[in-house]
Amino acid sequence: GPQLVNRVVDIADYIDRKVWVNMANVTQGPAGETGERVRRRLAAEGKRLPLLGTDAETANRQYTKYFAFARDRARGPAHGLEWAEYFHYIGPDESELDEYIRKNAVPL
Image 1 (cartoon, rainbow, N blue to C red):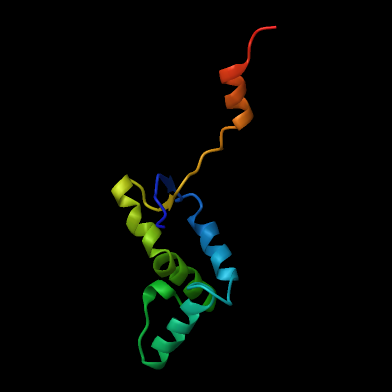
Image 2: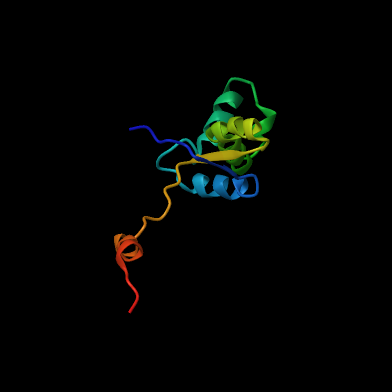
């Protein structure tokens, strides 16, 4: 079934690290070298996006941050944050033994 969100985490302090990690994955996902491909395609059409800069690393980093993680940026303001990531937190299971002891233990 669907993932029920019960936690919103401020990721502003980690977004740049998240970008670098995702850029390292060049074989799948929306990050990798996509920014440079877009920058080259636009250059061939006589266009450019200032956001993508003038080199491959900047293009890939900015593309990843502003397009691959657009959802994280869009979610933030609703929670008073610049960047936010949604999670479904499942707390630790309560031990059946602990529950049994709590209900059944008697003094010595």
